[in-house]
Image (cartoon, rainbow, N blue to C red):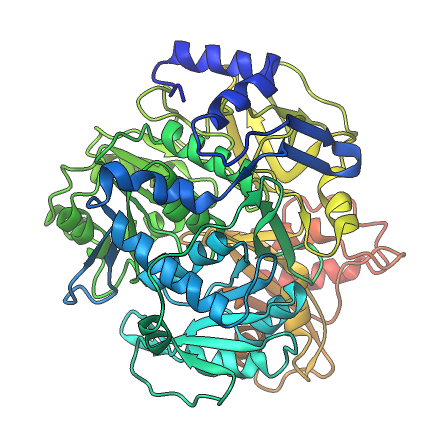
Amino acid sequence: MEIVSTMADYKRAYEQSVAHPEDFWSEIASDFVWKRKWDKVLEWDFKNAEVKWFIGGKMNITENCIDRHLAERADQTAVIWEPGDPGQKARMITYQQLHDEVCKVSNVLKSHGVRKGDRVCIYMPMVPELAYAVLACARIGAVHSVVFAGFSAGSLADRINDAGCKMVLTADGAFRGDKKVDLKKIVDEAVDKCPSVEKVLMLERIASKPSMKAGRDFDWQEEMNKADANCKAEEMDAEDLLFILYTSGSTGKPKGMVHTCGGYMVHVGYTFRTVFQYQPGQIFWCTADIGWVTGHSYILYGPLSAGATTVIFEGIPSWPDQGRFWQAIERHKVNTFYTAPTAIRSLQQSSVEFVEKYDLSSLKILGSVGEPINEEAWQWYNKNIGKEKCPIVDTWWQTETGGIMISPIANVTKLKPAFASFPLPGVQPAVMDEKGNEISGNGIEGRLAIKFPWPSIARTIYGNHQRFKEIYFSTFSGMYFTGDGCKRDDEGYYRITGRVDDIIIVSGHNLGTAEIENAIDEHKAVCETAVVGFPHDIKGQGVYAFVICYEKPKDEEKLRQEIRDTVSKIIGPIAKPDKIQFVSGLPKTRSGKIMRRILRKVAEGDTSNLGDTTTLLDPTIVDEITRGALG
């Protein structure tokens, strides 16, 4: 695999990838281990939302992430586990140990009846066993569905039922700063509503001694003690399912994005080595949770496919103080640090003394992921963390894309703060106007679409291909629509301007407005709700809820707290509204459509130009909402 190392390399690779995409990706794919080479590189039909890569190819992604490294780096550290408590000792897991533990978990799963194609839900804290579980599923051909261990029992049950999971892997609990979260209790409540679940495997993490249901619940360590440390990797077709990962949609039901084995492996492996200019022996730390796609692609599959050392972090950046990240960088001599703008903005609020007490000289490259980074945060990151010596790769991609799509290449691309810069080789973006026409040239603004498939594109929404087609391929004919707006400046640099649909990006995580509205409406006092995003200094976007009640609230603050508690219980704490405004009505057209653009303006504090309101059923409601917001 030829890695881009100069702008001349980039231009040459990009031109080849556009002119001869199949030859380009075939050459990259050849760097991986295949049990059988593909018969055909690509088949695609964007009008019907159908894409296949490396057709007929046979492989197993864990052989590429583990087995092929054993001859040369069996004793090299594959995973550094940094526990949440800085006083607890970190664990160094070699590639040989990773192999053995993954094989043991594989054999445990098989002993409990899990077979190729079965879906397994993983709801665990950020411990090494989470990585073993993910890789074990991939090794035996089971489809993993990792659910972030911050979701409620209801949200967990929805995801288990949608995927029809046969088994759930969890822990008794998790540490979240100085608090303990009872995961097993949440799982028990969820599984009671999930008829497909036959077994639950539980790891002890917080020693809470939860109740165990005979015949269903099994202790992780007891099962591992009986397991063999060798398990042959299942032969997988390139288009076999690797994982389902749920992301919020513009309708209430989360979308189970399906990623397949071959194309995903090739794309994340290539982008990891290219964007971060990975060199053997370097320490790579992506601070995301494996419950999100960033953790799948750039904690596990991308780094491990390259034989890198990857860090898994259990803690949070602000506990026991705001120096936690920088302490861990010093301790492990991290070379590449990849985090979210939300974390950067949060730490930016604290004294720079939390940074200055630690030696960050090992850092070579910084990265940003999850949402567009604002220029102020970019400059703080560059000055205080990178010491103006480390390039910042501001990466744009999505759960649906599987891997990085638009990004600077470290030490190659000339940087512009808050610009994702150029598309990677193999990625063909288009800037579209609202009428569906591509806008040519530079110095333009519109909606971001992609006009040619890339290997890690999601193949479908699990169980609902029609929904997949309607959401991503119906807006612009023959193109994938990202849902994001963008600018392309005079030099061709891309800047992502945020969502143009009903998605709010809170702390880098997509939340569907409809899902939050449905949760708020569950409160017995609430009649109707409209939710929009608004600019938030720390989280990027906050959640602003306009709520109609059956009766005028007697105690508004008490009701606000009850509504937040309801959302937290139904979805999870991440979705709690930051602002709740009680209103008597919503701005609706005569056909009943809520005019969200007006509510967004109010939420943003920009009420000077709300546009034409004469088409509304009741224009006076806008004045009432505006006064309430200003008040």
